[in-house]
Length: 211
Length: 211
DNA sequence: GTAAACATTTTTGGCGCCAATTTCTGCGCG
DNA sequence: CGCGCAGAAATTGGCGCCAAAAATGTTTAC
Image: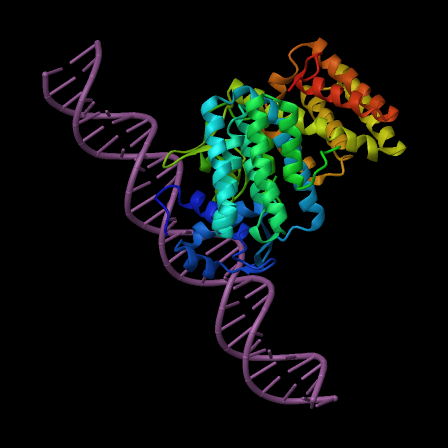
């Protein structure tokens, strides 16, 4: 529960970010420092640091003398973040195609299969994590580490809470198919195809972006 | 010198970021908290908060029990950040073209002219600030605010210190011309042209990106 | 003369307390 | 019965002090 010696603050930021994403706190709820330090078994100072960094990431908002509350992003921001993810992750496509080895492709296919299985047998959280695992593995093929970091950070900020992500069963199955389409595009070395599949996957639509 | 009541910490982060960019501190130098609190007239706690946030922005690096030192990015990171800026800012081009009014274009042309004048008459710092002013004004045409924020943050992290930015007089004059080329592309409503000028401008090369 | 060990000084980082502000609760008044 | 007000409780946020760790300077032994 309590994190290690030095990485305490950084680890707490990650854990809290995950919890906010997962909807542990109600949207717009006030985060009382006392509750947080009990919940995470952290010191007051660590909680404050974590809240400050989360405010910088726009996951929470700070109001002087009132405290921090989880920042529920409106539709506009959600759209803008999705659009940004399309820009970044499709820009990464050519680099991914360039660097993907046979072993990478095999691993990705396994992860795609795992996600597909969990559609039937897994819990929502397992599906969520399997999806993350696939996308992180895919992103790491890109040689631009700064782009990887930005894309991951953006994914953390976006409306990816399981509750809102896959609305229908048809949609989650479509996502599963798209994972295989990405792997196939990689195997075929078709960067343009990969790009458009990624774009459609993020936007959860059939059409490709026209930004 | 000392910042306002509430925004103290946030303002200090901005000021310190600017100073690091401007090369006030030597690359890799250790930032002693005592020096910082005297230099900026801030409390110890504000300095610590600012350093933490700067570490999150990767402008400084933290070593436990040693302190914070300015993070000199290597060539690889510099290239990756430049590449990311190309991706983001050229992705913004169509939106810029869509939203630019006649008034916007006039303002931008004035800013471009100001930069051109300062090439001859201004100091390096003035040139730097005029350049920033032009680019911020241009970016703000984009309707995607998240993209704007990311691009600005990235610009702050990149190797934009005046010392390394414009190596030759020919290059700074070329930058000045490119500013006008961007304004012209905006006025003509040519998003593709704007995109390639922006890409070339960031990469400081004549060729357009092939990412 | 050099290098290692020791002592001093500087710096970081954590812990706790207390003041300022806000919110909640209960009471009185119209 | 509702509204407003005052006191109390709770929460945030700032300030300072002190211990642990590192860097520096000094002494001593070889």
